[in-house]
Image 1 (cartoon, rainbow, N blue to C red):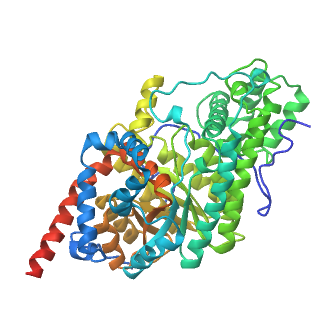
Image 2: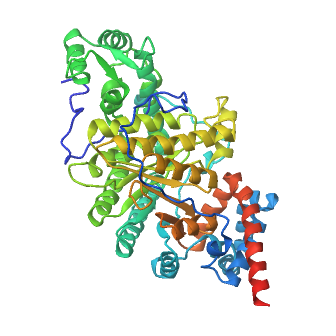
Image 3: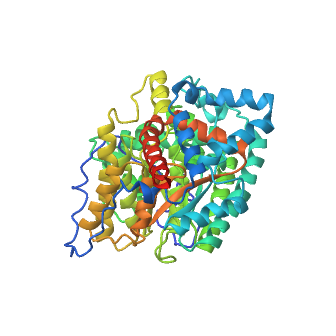
Length: 556
C-alpha cells in the first residue's frame, strides 16, 4: 500500500472528505478575459443605480440622538493617537472601573458599531433594518489570535523535523473553541428563525488554536512549493516524466511503488497532473507517511504535523463540520471570514472541504458555505479562478464574499520584518482593479455556469458598487437574484446600505454582537488595522452633519 492509498481524487458526494486544498501561483493577472468566454446574453435587465447622495433616505432609520452619537464616534475615529492607542487606553480604563467603562462604551462606540449583547437585545436592530429593506448578518465577535504574531515584531519559532520535535498546545483554548461552537450554533439558528435568506459569520481562529492554523498553513505551503519543484518547465502541469523524475529525486521509492503512486495521481492516464489534482491528493494528515520516505529532511518534512497536531486538526475540522451541518439543516448561509495570510491556507483548506460536502449540486440548490477573498492580496485573482475551476470539476455551488482586506498594516510590517515581499498590492489602484475585476469575473461566470454562483459584494466603496451594478446589467443579473448581494458594516456607510435597500437590492448589515469585553477588542483592532475606516469617517461625518442641519432647519 502506498502513502497515498487512503486518499482518492473522486469521492461520493455524501462522504466526508478530508482535504486541505491550496492554490498554485502567486502572480496576479488582473485580466480575467482569458478564463472563459461567456455565452451570448439577452440584456433585458436594467437595474437602477441608486442616488447614494440621498442622505435623507440614508439616515431615515436614525433618530437625532443616534445621529449625534454617530457624529461623536466618527470624530473620535479621526484622531490617530486615540485609534492607535485605543486598546491600551481601554485596558487602563477597565482596570480602574470596568463597570463605568462598559457603560460609557455602550453609550458611544459600542452602541454605534455593535448591535447588542445577545440575540434578544439585537432583535430590535434586526427589525428596524428589515423595515428599510436591509437584512442582517449575525457576527459573534469573539476572535482568538496568537498575541506574539499580531504585529511585524513576530519572532519565528524554528521548525524541526517531526521525529525530534515535541510541541505543546494550550488545551484550555480547546475548551474555549468548543464553547465558541455552541455560540455559533445558536447564531446559525437565530438567523434561520428570523429569515429564510440569512447569513451567519464565523471565524476559524475561534475554532482552532491560531498557532495550529499557522503550522497547518506552513505544511500546505510546502506542499505547494513541492508542486513547483516537480513542474520543471513551469507550465503549471506536471507531466508523467516530470513526476517520476521529481519523485525519484526527493523520495526513496521502488519502481513498482512509483507506478502505483502515479496511477493514483493520474487515474485516467491523461499524461499530466494539474495543481487542483495535486492539492486534492496531498493531505497534511498523510504527510508523516509521505515524508518518512524523504531522502533527507527538507522543508516539507520539517513542516509535517506531529501526532498531537493531527489530533487537534481533526478536532478543528469536526467543529467546522458541526457548524456546516447545522447551517445546511436550517438553511442558513455560512460566511467564513478571511484572516491573516499566515492562517489563510489552513482556513481555505477547511472551507473548501466543507464546500464540497454542503454546496454539492446533487444535494442542494444553493451555496451554503462561502469563502472570503481579500482582494488586496496579490494572489487573490488567481486563487479565485482556481477555486471556480475546482467547483466546476467537483460539482459544487460556488459561494464567495469579496472584501478588500482588513490586515494591511500588520501584513506589510510582518513581511518587512521577515525580509519577504509584501503579499499586498503596492497601490490602492491595483486593489480596486482586483476587487472590481473579481466581481465582474464571477458575474460573468454565473451567466455561463450550470452551477449556482453566489457573490457577497462586501464593500464600502461607492464606485465598486456602481461598477457591480453595471456588470449586473451587462450579464443580465436581476437585483433580487441570489447571485449577488451587498454588505456593509453596521454603523458605517448607511448612504450605501439604505439606498440599495430602497431600490430593492439584496443588501445586508454585518452585525457584530456579544458582551462589551468581547466585542470592543475586536472592533478596536479592526479600526487600528484598517486605515480606510478612519478615512471613511471623514465623509460620513460630513453627511451626518448635513442631515442634522437639514432636520434642524426643517424644525424651525
